[in-house]
Each structure stands twice: as structure tokens, then as C-alpha cells.
Amino acid sequence: MLKLTIRNLGDATIFRCEGRIVFPEAETLRVAVFTHSRTRLAVLDLAGINAIDGAGLGIFVSLRAWSRATGTRLKLMNLKPRVEYMLKLTHLRPLFEICSVRDVLELFCHIFNRSRLVEAEAASDIPALDDTGLMSIEAR
Image (cartoon, rainbow, N blue to C red; front, top):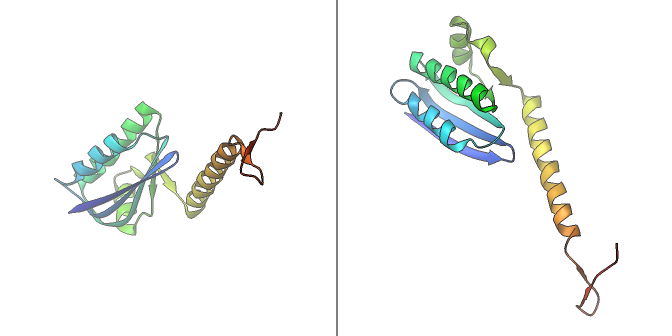
């Protein structure tokens, strides 16, 4: 059985996969990515995957084609040795970007900094209250 947990983080959607990406459940991953990824980056976190078959590899190829057609970056993260071996064995490994720990940290820092900028911009547009509780508007 394949279990998916989907998290939207700013410009990225993380798909945490657990279980097996095998026929007939592999289709679940493709449908989830197609319907939930409305961002510029889709990351498949494969740390919880313990098996993958030809159907699962076919889904990866399908997602790669989708990502190229839509301009969405697709990255694989936390590949277990078995999954990486299957990608190498089938000569699919060079077709995919693999997220490193550094990539993930940079992504989280970028999202955090962006959210702080948005908060700061929102705060600067709100008129301040003076000691009497009345709004004071400063000329800019």
C-alpha cells in the first residue's frame, strides 16, 4: 500500500511517500502530483519507500514528462539504496534531479525568508496606534 502526505511550502510541494510504489497503487502517486502540485517545484520524498516495480518507474517517467511540459521542477529526495539501484539499473537515474540535504535546507531558508518579507511588507502598510489608541498617519 502507498501512503502519501502532501505539504505545500511556498513555491514547493513535498510528496512524502511511504510503502510501495508498485502496480496497481503506483497510479496514486501520479494522480496526487497532477492534482496537488500548483507550484514551481514538486519534490518526491522517497525515504519511506521499501519497494518499486516497473509500474512505479513508469510513473516516475510520466511525472518527468509532465514536469517538463508544465515547467515544474521535479526532484527526488531521500532515495533508499534499492530505489537508487533500480533507477541506475534501468538507466533512468540521469533523468532525475536528486535533492541533497543542502538543497532542502536552502529551500526551507528561502521559504522562511520570503514569508518574513511578506510579513514585514504587510506590517508596514498598517497604520500605527499612538499612546492614546488613535491612529497616526505619517507622511511618506
